[in-house]
Length: 620
Image 1 (cartoon, rainbow, N blue to C red):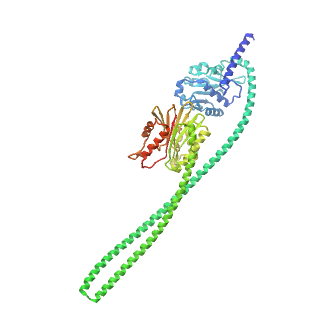
Image 2 (tube, helix red, strand yellow; image 1 turned 90 degrees about the vertical axis):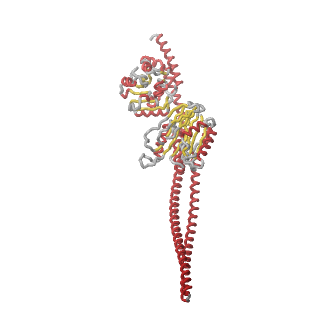
Image 3 (cartoon, rainbow, N blue to C red; image 1 turned 45 degrees about the horizontal axis):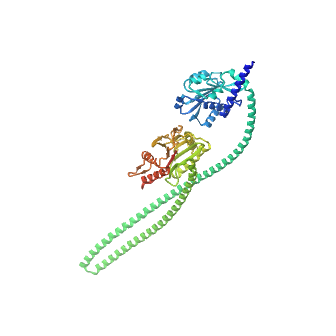
């Protein structure tokens, strides 16, 4: 080996060593040129790292709804690793990540990366010809040089990768220059690099050994943190048990209330029957009085006849007969009057007894109503306690308002605002029914939403609604039969990235209003509830849009636009609601709250509130 050749190898090794150091500094997550164990988790990590270093054609990205990765193969462990990594990243190039298996994707526009392994025995040239010109990056493992676009290879037991620059350029991809510099161009380059970097790899092994010792020390700290988390989890379970006990208590109160209402209704029917009997008795007395009056009139007539006869006959016998007859009529009259008096006295005594019984029942009903009302008021305290406190909401949203007007003491409407790092999740929810049934549904909704967003870290709007629907159906034991009541929720939910000011909206019947530069844009919701419906197997959709400083967002239930009132007792309607929101844009959020509250009160006038009212306004 000549001296010039050794010098050339030295300079190449020096240059590649610098590039490797830059790669380690700029991309610490994955080292494609390392000697680490190349398991499925590492393989999935490498594939997504490649995606970060490739720029797709603009036309491909504009047409795509998702950032899709398709795996052609049957390795279930690799499938799980790819899905796990996609869930950790959540999005790529501001698009949700979807992993398709065995070419199960819906359309080619949603596929950006296609991965195959030579172990699966796919003809790579046929695969390449099928996806050629469609903006799909072909990533493979174990194939020969230049058969793929990007290919993982194994040389002397170590993993490396090569890039086919010609095929990459033909598809319009742009590759990160540092990423391109680290790729292997020919097999001869790799063999030379192996000789030059052998000493460096030994040093890296020593570094890895030191890092493993540090990791071992940190593992102990992680174990301690796990213990603390277990303790907190037990506290959460205890609180959930308490909440479940409260649910059972409310259910028992409702059953007692239903039994008492049935008893009251039965007593009312008895009282109505007794009143009818008394009315019949009174009618009978009046009839007897009428007969008695007729008899008295007849007696007077007979007396006149007798007087005429007495004048004509003027005999003692006739006078005696007349006296006997008059005495007899008086006795008859006294008999009927006394009998009517006794009957009336008995009726009055019975009526007085019934009045006393009714008064006692009314007092008992008043007492029971007070106990029930006190229980519902206590339930309102529980419901209010689980809603986000105003102090926490102000920390998340400094400029906002919440117009919250339950129709009864407790409400079937609720709102939730929570933040996970730079992601802000806001929702306004309308549960089936109102009062106590609606409040029970709202408490379930709050608990499940907190579990989905805070505990499981799910921040994709459509995934939140899909997951909430599944949990509600399981908790209510609903299987989709026609006989089941369709209990559920209508809601509007938006997810805001506070750093990029990008917003994603998903809704169940309830829309989202976005006002920018005094222009109102309505984002429609899916026409299905979060619960049991004919569309139970359909996924909720989502709308993505950009928001700017000074924009306002409004989430609401149907209570405000559906309120009856005005001169003709008609609904407020969505059109009038939109016009009112545009009129108040020059006011701050506190004034907007007051104007909306005053407007609905003036609209209602003397009419009753028909439903719970909830309006959430947010100024960016």
